[in-house]
Image 1 (cartoon, one colour):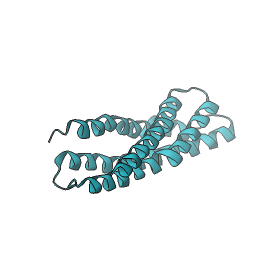
Image 2 (cartoon, helix red, strand yellow):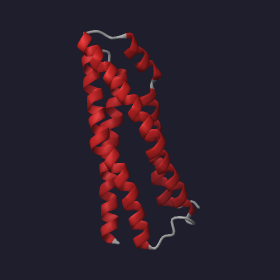
Image 3 (cartoon, rainbow, N blue to C red):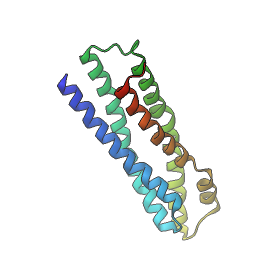
Length: 155
């Protein structure tokens, strides 16, 4: 059981490093004025998502199930754990893919605009949509709730 706890804690650290490496550059890219700096920040966010956030979230999900199984916790009738699973699955299957699609779209348009040397209308429209900002903020808002559930076990 100690092995699974350690593995789960390490995977949570990787996921949180991915959250920081992805969400902060996204938020900063929207606040930036220069196109070159936006491109650099969007590239940094893309790397953080693919190298840390996605693997960390998937590892956290599977190591959490392994730890719960090793501890003898029933993942179906333990209601705080059911709520935690729902939040994790919403993050993994709804918020993260939508953020990723929006991030890739804005990144490709920013790279194309940088190649042209000026802000394009398509990039301006994509930046006005705020898709990566909205879903990255939703991911950030679910994290304190995901921490609160196993600490206080409200139900």
